[in-house]
Length: 427
Image (cartoon, rainbow, N blue to C red; front, side):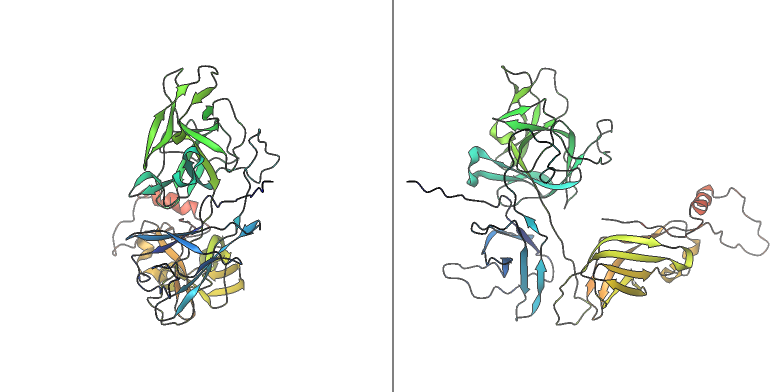
């Protein structure tokens, strides 16, 4: 008798990134090392499992660590980080988003009847290549020092956009909908903003790119990325890796089937969805021994009213009554509604300078949260005040300005008749 053992592998190891060029560097205490190890990953565990972390990489910039397990059968899990500084001070406990455990989809034709594994435009994905199905040969598409690389150490998240075939390169307004094979897509690194040229995504079967398939793509499918153009009748040029470099591969047309192109192993990528969460805080102005967690996260802003009675509602998570909204260095009157909602009164623009009313350009102010003990939580959001048309009063006896002296500001005045500011979100 032969016993069959089913082995499940976390294809993208859950990863923690700690900034090294910050006050955290050198402050995280390692504690006692387990037998046989000279270095220890500090207090990161898979929630409810006790799985141990393995150190993946350390360099001068960022420390990467991953975790994986084989015994748990649950459908979701999360990473939990307990961060302790040297001297025993607990910085806090940080939770990842829920991580979904998925099974490899069927290679049969996919449809939109089951969209759980389908990938929509604007989703975050990661790509990896595994030569001859050997785990030790796995290479992830990543970005290092401003270049795309095939890394054996770390993966990167990319936003997958459906691109418009009629737009010039560098200008790709995002389109909605599920991504299908044969679509023109663009990959944008979520951290650096580095972008690959528009490419056609192709389904891969038996090391061939299928040129006539238009079904929805699914997670864990093998796919290839073809650069548009090329001579008629050719196999096309595809995104490929060569050791740690990302290069182009010239495919050959299949001699038996015209709707296929012959690829090499290095041109076949596996696609999988990813998720990440970033926590930002600063204790430089706060003298607190309390943990910094739970870190409040802002997801959207909603503006109501106008003029002198405008309010801004912040939607997110981990809000509490001890938080205040700040516009730059100006504290706003803040009202706590729920753990997911804060409302504040938009400060008068005069708070940012008495001469602002004569300025002709908008002014953008960062939006942040400050805890009662002074702990500062920055965000990726900002608020933009747009000036109304106001002519600076001239000296006595000076002639009045012409009616068409500043058509630009006049148009701004008409556009913002009901409100003298405009919400602008930067992410």
